[in-house]
Image 1 (tube, rainbow, N blue to C red):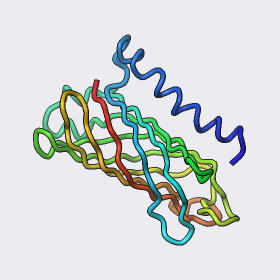
Image 2: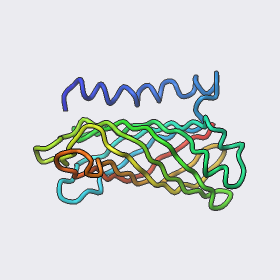
Image 3: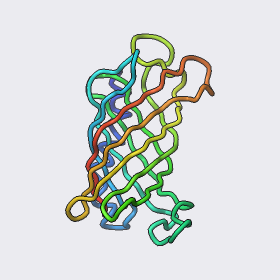
Image 4: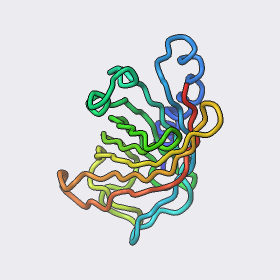
Length: 182
């Protein structure tokens, strides 16, 4: 991966980590910040190493104030990224997230949106992704810890769903994240 590509992908994660607290304190723009590590689940053209991940979530549609079915109709917005520690494919993504409580302390979540990556399009030993813009979806199960802290197990997938010319190996990763709910 080239230095400009690394900088372009590292910048959003660095930005998220530096501004999350001041933004929340001033405007309560973001209500959830998560950071963790992922690994590749792909077979065949598997990626090596771990991926540092970060995600911020916000509630512009008033999901927290909604009740019943209205909660399902009001997703939160998320923005995040995954940075390879070994020069594999890194990506940034954004989309919609739906969180459903299972018990008072356990919840499940699903998200859907788009991603941009710096990986191989159609050559090499890495996953061949066909085009730069991909769909990105994830599922997670989480548990609330002490105070505002939470621990999540998540799996995510990015691919172009055969809507671009070229290969569609996709990226599938899973891991753990620690979150803080503001």
